[in-house]
Image (cartoon, rainbow, N blue to C red; front, side, top):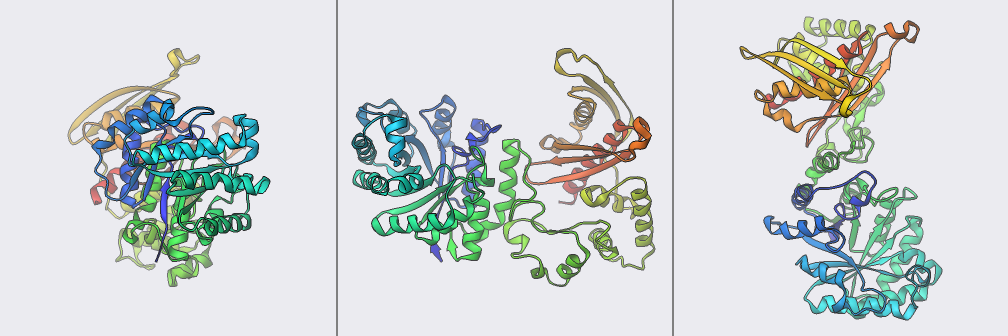
Length: 523
């Protein structure tokens, strides 16, 4: 297999996405995961930009990495300055990484109108900065910022900038589609020209997703000869995001025969993608290729029948190959065989004629008539099946709960809840405040269960949806509540239906916790 180096910039470029901020501990955990995945380079931050990144680099000695080389990121020296006198470069060296990445201007417009210096001075800055860092014994990655825009505007100058980097000792030239506006044919043509022009220097690609083409552009660059591909886990990043390594890696490795990570590590792709989403405190994209919850989900009856006969009929790779799992949804278009399949996951001895199967299907129909919909809440359906088959033992018994809502909210929290439960012969009473009654209930219940089930500390409510089922009844209408809950590896959805929104929410919350505890016991 042809070798291509996977270069991750989740902790630097990815952290520039709106709403994302990694703590030092977060960054250390993510580095460990990326190293387990077999990523070759991890661009971990700019030690000259903030104290948090500087602390992170100082703590890197705590890690014992097997695969990854850590990269500290910075820019060329300032206009008119000598590299050895540049404070930012001094901070970069203080990170004590064996490799550094330096970005420099390759678009003449940026040189004259943004840096406001001469074209020659910019070339001097690139050449001298890289020579200085090479003199310090560093492997140097040169990020040619806005390279494709620069090449389209003034190809001669863009190539001169790369030549200056090579003269300074660059180990690799990374061509950046910084504005994310280029198309795959342009990326291929220009990358191929650079590869031919600098045969002794590795070429990389760094794409942004402003045209929804970052993955395609990255793949085409590799086909044109690039041997380093940069991106982020889940494609997080500024504006529309960066190229998504969770799609690039399997596309190149499975489809085109390139080697980016160890074959056995590919099964860590989905768990790591979800871990990064969880750590970044963002909802994981269910529609993401390879690593999304829906990537191998089937709903239509004809699709399901075909997949049951041979998954290749509707799956381009096996879900297990990327650490994902196949899901077959229950819905009005799925059919009885789908429901039976879910039942057999709990008890393989049952068939379509078993009395238990008929009882479960009758119960399912009754619940659907009452407003339940298990297509998006299969965790609740699994618990229902286990209860009806006598394979469920409740982790706790509710004695009672009370919820108080205060408006206007004093001190920011407008709700409080008190919960009394019974576990293993003991009663536990706790109270908690929250932003709304459901949040208060969630906090109070988990606080009550904490000493009995400490594993619940790792879960959190990640989504909450309410739908009124019969608007003609106004405030007396039934509501359906769907709650998504996540831990570091998985997410699951549970459901509750009632004419009381608090009661519906409680039912969904209890199912969420019972599902987590039941799964923990089975493992």
